[in-house]
Length: 198
Image 1 (cartoon, rainbow, N blue to C red):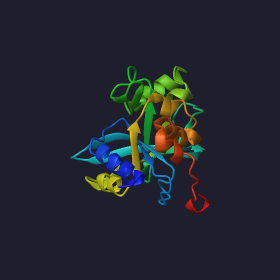
Image 2 (cartoon, helix red, strand yellow):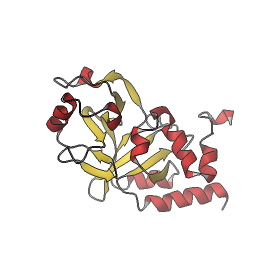
Image 3 (cartoon, helix red, strand yellow):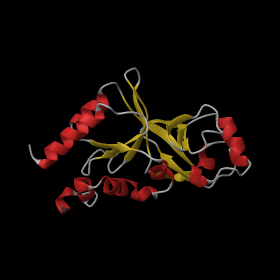
């Protein structure tokens, strides 16, 4: 077994323990336009519903106030969370102690919660754009579907932190997270998107 096979074997084993609060980094040469060079934050993963995640590094050319009526003025970016349910709005934030119904994914990183409460907090000026991210749509996998993709070497798994979501510029998340993992992943971070250029 060569080094690359060992890495993917290791990643597949790690995927068996996949849980909410982890990141999925697309393999360097993934061809799927929806997920090429993406970083997906896993928000839910179980044997009943499969997996739900949000792509955290694909901003779209719209503002939140363009798509949500009666929302307080807000300057934060809007991201494409995935190709499923693009008429739905998801959000990640760091204020789980103030927004009821928030799901804690990791320290300082929460998913969803009471939307009306969120609007009031934003209207009062008590939440900065750096503390929240909004997403249209989400990424979803049926039961066993993601495990198969892991077996096919499509994803690399690592733990998410609030830094990945709120502090690293979105265009750098994939590369910087690969570098953080070190070793061969650091090498992968430098791969060109077009394998013909490698």
